[in-house]
Amino acid sequence: MIIEKPKKDFFISYNKADKEWAQWIAWELEQVGYSTFLQDWDFRPGSNFVLDMNKYIASSDRMIAVISPDYIHALFVHPEWASAFANDPIGEKCTLIPVIVKDCEIESLLAQIININLVGLNNVAAAERLLEGIRLERTKPQTEPFFPGQ
Image (tube, rainbow, N blue to C red):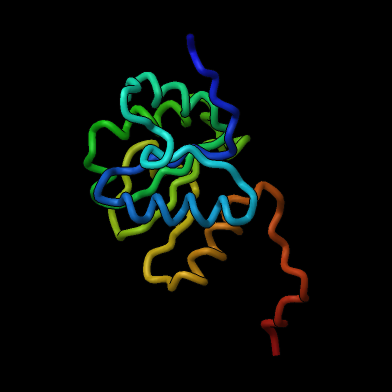
């Protein structure tokens, strides 16, 4: 008997070296009402890791890739973000959202995706940037910008 998993807002893709960042991101998202799939929280003993990965990615509207040098150099995360990229190659649905947590050189197709950069921010500023970055609507400010002229 196959147990169907409910659709979730985000699948969090990360390398084990960034586990704390992945957990923090998932927590912040769930605190404001989004739903997530996170390996540490959702993959259970006795299940098949590869099949679960496939099922959870397919059952998520969008993917957050937790970007660091460890992520960039890890082989097993490439198919994860590549599947999200393949489902939305021109970014119309913002399916793949890179979230940079450590300075690194991003190359290849992943470098073309607009990212959310959390490097050097405190927890409050990082949470604000994360939540603003995942919003699908326009982010026009509520107040008039400062006049840059004389």
